[in-house]
Image 1 (cartoon, rainbow, N blue to C red):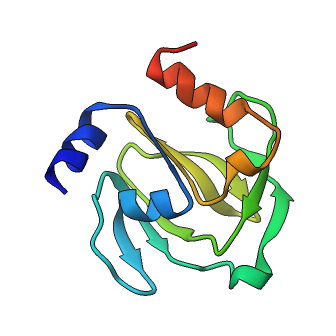
Image 2 (image 1 turned 90 degrees about the horizontal axis):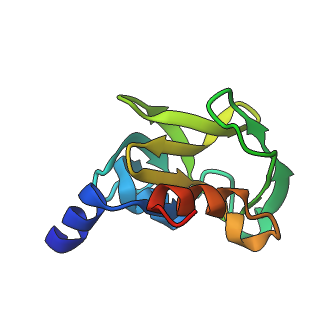
Amino acid sequence: MGALSEFVRCRPVLGVCAGIILLAEEVSHPKQKSLAALPIAVERNSYGRQRDSFMASLEATAEWSGPAVEGVFIRAPRISRISGETRALMRYKGDTVFVEHRNVLATTFHPELTEQTALHEYFLHKCGKI
């Protein structure tokens, strides 16, 4: 994962659902290797199986200045720990579901499956495109 690890270290990155698993420092259920680019721990498929998928309104934290958004959760991982300089941007029923750490953004849900664009605009802003 050398070239990919280097890219994540120096470029803006957005990890969505399985992407947060790939970026997390620690992965469980089952345990697996990752890029360890985010100082968080995640548990795979924590909200249930495919048939348990759902859409929900998310709670913005004080760190998020954008509009409220909805998230689509499909076999979603759950963030069980955040540490270091990681900022929690949104929550669902007390669980952190959107984080930022330096150049990396990551969600446990699928923002691309709604018509809302606030998260994508935020990412583009980090990329210097807006």
